[in-house]
Length: 305
Ligand SMILES: Nc1nc2c(ncn2[C@@H]2O[C@H](COP(=O)(O)OP(=O)(O)OP(=O)(O)O)[C@@H](O)[C@H]2O)c(=O)[nH]1
Ligand SMILES: [Mg+2]
Image (cartoon, rainbow, N blue to C red; front, side, top):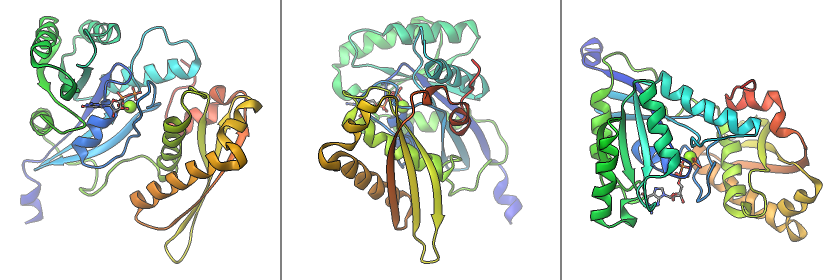
């Protein structure tokens, strides 16, 4: 019986690529039905490869969300991020290219990603995203333009936020997956460690609340993770800033900012883990966190790039 059920299974990797802020993480979360990858209105929210596992009938799709690809990355971290995105694309069974349809025209980063794919002889399934913000005629113009590049296997018009078109896209991606056994148990959501997931949730709060003051100057590391008999977990995290002056921004007046960040992150983490969470945060100045090899290892990024 069990053997019979396994017949006809498919499993594969879909790399979600695109320019920064195109809506990659929102779209991936929507396709798996849970928030796995953090989202913010700012560019460079996603910093590493984030997997999320989606089931469609007998098909398991392992989505790999990636940092936005942009051209001319300078800092080591930015280079590692862009590099991680291209690698994910190279390893995937299908590439989902997410394009922000709300931009006036197809943006330069997207154009260059398309050129990069063509140079590698890869076609992408294209999701023209944020259609809730755009008029239909301008959408068609963009779709035609993308089609003309020859790099699009199919073009779907979707709204990751409202859900329009997303199921058709997911069904099509499922059909593209190779036959074979599933890589993960059916109910598994991600292969990310809980420590990294917890760090990402805190970073999301930092991004949402402090991005204007601290663009990209922060990182979060989960330092300890203790589980108790009653099912609760105590998590201690360090928030790294690059300069002493930035500590005060994260702490806020009388510690009000860090308190709000901690409370929001704790609630979200408790919801995802389905258990009580104690979260303690410490802000540390670490001028060179973006050069620290061990952090890149935690994030699954290449330090040498
Ligand atoms: N209106 C609208 N907004 C969207 C849609 N999809 C994503 N967004 C918004 O676009 C912003 C960026 O979304 P993300 O999912 O973080 O984008 P991303 O491509 O993962 O960004 P990076 O990780 O920084 O490269 C957020 O404010 C989202 O809410 C959509 O379909 N419609
Ligand atoms: Mg993202």
